[in-house]
Length: 184
Image (cartoon, rainbow, N blue to C red):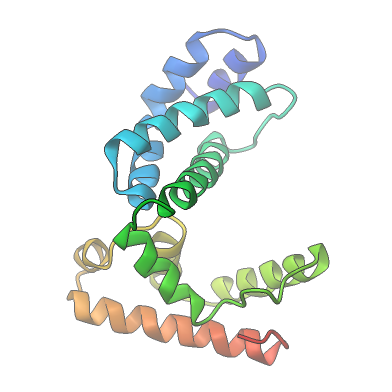
């Protein structure tokens, strides 16, 4: 079934929308949630919450990319769950990933909508200027939460080479942001 057909099921309020969504995009959503939470049980709950959120948002929303729409919902729900769980225990994977980003992304510099928009624009422009491999690696690490070891395997590098490459990318982003007036 195509994404447009699945979106049509949501708009017609057919219960098959959920099962068809799970068939086509369930694996993607589970992997994304699991990368953030490191717990299968929590990831499954987040995926279920994603389907409920999609059901409630369509209509009126009609996403141009169902996968991206579901990915954003899953990621936001998973990060919220992570923050809730963090009070009780620590999750090493996302702690490391977020720690890496702290060195190059301003924490409180983007307090207003205009500043957030400008920051987003600068980061998007920086990503556009990267090679396809660097861009894919950066997005997979910091959006999808892929492990360095997994990235290294997929890109034919050692984990050490990948870690150094990620460090260079973060340094490059930090330099651009500082040049644009964001204090890191």
